[in-house]
Length: 486
Image (cartoon, rainbow, N blue to C red; front, side, top):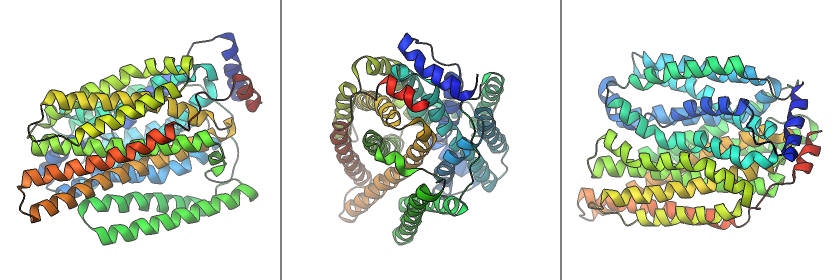
């Protein structure tokens, strides 16, 4: 059976009440969980790395910034790449790069080697995320997508949230090198199992690549993330200049794609944005990730700098929220299949806003159980929101645009995460500096800065509530989806 025939058969099986998840999906979910976990796994290791590699905190932050920077540069190209190669080739490329980067990181003798290893890791991660979403949309029947996407949310949402907890546990056992030494055999086993059992899905297409698009996409999105990261270090003038340059290059990239849509094959097909549920969902996901990653950074700084908790203890405090997101994912998926998305999205977004509003009121003596409860409400709200929005957004575009829709979504998520982190850290620093200049105690000044930064995240979450009301409750009918695949 060809890939196209397999896709059509899978979609048609929805009318037969099939509830079996195609084997390709769990394989890709497991691989994606492993690679995404590494995006935040170094958060708790910064002090260890500073001491071991004799670097400053600002330099150490580049290990995370470079990861996001690479993702932002690589992901726009994956739509074209996934159209050209088979599923197995894309999987082997992604996991091969990730394994090479992980092995190099485990033995890195100096900072620059570790930085290069993180860039190689991120290159593999940048291919894996769109590969998972594109394959899922091709092989899972429309009536089962909520259930399957609920399981997939474990990799997309829980892995970044669990990164600090996992790293805290591993760091309690030994050196920072264990972070990579533990992941390496797991990733190797996942790679071996995937290559043994992973089928090819869809048919590769011979398409040419527009190198001007490649250059402007990499320089534009990469430059934007780089510029945003500089706001955290206080280089406001340089940061603003680089952000403006990145935006200008992105504008050139968009103009080039619109031109190519009429005359050739675009690197990223922007016709996905003509589908309102996809565009609305894209905005919701981007703003949600801004608030999520920004709040993660603020909470980590609060727990470790102001409450003097160890990396392990602070990781354990936020672990229940991460576990709740994972455990609730399948439940949310089944509820989505039965009742639609809006009944989950609206209360979920409200829950996120209420949790963030609660975090604006923390003090230096706030009980830890209350912090845990607020983080749990935040996690549950995100779990109820992200799965339906992912499913409805990607389900709104034709199957021929799945790879492009997934690439756009994942690219803007990385940019949004970087923007959210830069925004809250900049707001926190400026407010704290102003309070210290006014004679406020250093700890109270930092607390005041953090509370204002969380308030900014809470205000952003109100946008998600408003946009959630514009989302449909369900995707198009199964019959329409099957016809689109012929």
